[in-house]
Amino acid sequence: MDEEISSRRILKRGLRVMGKMIRLEPGVFTIGAVGAVVHSVATLAGAFISGAIVDRVVAPSIADGEPAIAGMAIAVVALVALTLVKIGGLMARRLGAGSMQFRLQARHRRRVTRQYLDLPMSWHQKHSTGKLLSNANADVEAAFVPVAPLPFAVGTLIMLVVAIVAMFVTDWALALVGVAVFPALFLLNVMYARWMSPRMARAQHLRAEVSSVGHESFDGALIVKTMGREDHETQRFNESADELRDSLIRVGRLRGLFDPLMSSLPELGTLAVLLVGVQRLSSNAIGVQEIVSITFLFSVMAFPIRAITWVLGDLPRSVVGWERVYSVLEERGAMTYGQRHEDDAVSRGAHLEFENVSYAYDPSHPVLTDVTLSVDSGKTVALVGATGSGKSTIASLAARLVDPTTGTVSLDGRNLKEYSHAALAETTALVPQLAFVFDDNIRDNVAMGRAGLDKDDDAAVWDALKIAQADGFVSKLPDGLDTQVGERGASLSGGQRQRITLARALAAQPRLLVMDDATSAVDPKVEAAILAAMRNSSAPTSVLVVAYRRATIGLADEVIFLEDGEIKARGPHPELLATVPAYAQLVTAYERAEAERAAEGEFDEPQVSTTSEVSA
Image (tube, rainbow, N blue to C red; front, top):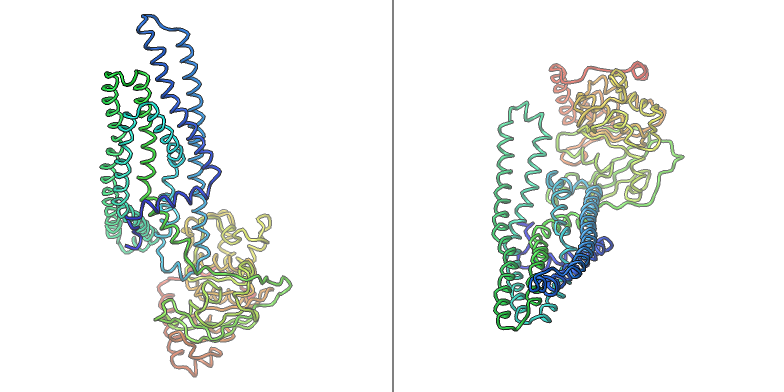
């Protein structure tokens, strides 16, 4: 499995990950670690104070038959002060550890999300949505699980060193018995890490699979229900969930075996110290204060030792999560942009040009081969071709969702790579095949928070809706622009969603509009009105449209006919219809299919506004 981490190096890699986490958040880690040290030192001091109280207050009181009031008062004050110091250290430790963990998680979720936005569409097409969600959520969470006990563990390392020195100073024999626990504890953690690593890698991989299956089922709920495949999808999800359950049970079983062993070792050490201490006490080698101090010291060390085991026990899961997160962050291929900005004074449509462009998602299967075309300023060019001929790829290249394998795509004579990201967003708008509407109101779906589309002035939004032939049905909605459309525009029809998506693209008045079969769900009359309204609008726009309807194609200034990723013919629609048999056959087939769909009532009812009808 490619996600699996080598179990032999899990401890070394885990400690390296911990070091990186500390370097990322040194401030809050220091607060947590200092708090842990203060708490640990106070705990150690409590062991010696307890021994002194037993030896100098409790034992004399029992021997004399009356309490030592002054000594008891001093003991109470000392214990209260010690408790307050421990509380302060504990608060600092908890706040530092919690802040460090949540800050690291938030930072890496943002980094993963930004990386997703930077990586090209070609990368996203190779990874399922469920895996991407898992990387940004479950994997980030898993990577930083050990952060919570980390400051405590670091503080206890100092505590252990001081405690071991104190034990040897007090009595070397009891100290040897106590420290014998640590090699056994370390060996157990090494074994645990090696056995747990592949199990955790498998569990994290299955989390992504379950997320992916669930996302597909929810996203395709309409298809699942209309085809009556609920039982099939339920079974498919159950199989993935059961596999994840079994994997997590294997993780739990292993942890259930090792946790009691690691927790019992310090307790066994305390018992051994007591047994040896009694023998040493009976031979007058040590006194009561020494045996009480060492026994108490070792007993209070049991919990800190467990804190170290918690960190070591979470290392396999942390390393797996870290590797999965950084496999995304270290991906190369993010699109780089230039510094060229759009000239605000330019009011004409953009000039788009492809020069000897080839593209391949897979090097062995090219999608486009040596494509050369242009869209002149203010003109409309239609791309026509059978499914798989490369039309959508040309649309993606024009909007620079992907870069060509070879060749150049330029805008106004400049390579698209020279433009800044903001300049491309202002100049070019893409309306994709699948209309995506956010779970928001219509105003925000069209405006998208862009400059110049102020919520206090809806004129630009209404203008865009009017050109997209959407103003008619929007004005009839109960709340107009404030109408909530539901997730993915559930309350709208397919054609209405397409027109809202088109209005979103038109609202910023782009100089180049790329339409990838973006009006397939609207009535042909409405589609013709939309294209005519764009042609007659006050702001000239160059249009590259993937089309199949004769009415749409007929409005284009030039038609480019594609076959198998190559341009086979170009020219006016009537000319191609008369001279290119393959083109005529394809357009005629489209027209027949269109008629059949219209007869079956698949299109929305035409909702053309009066203003648009006049302009059309």
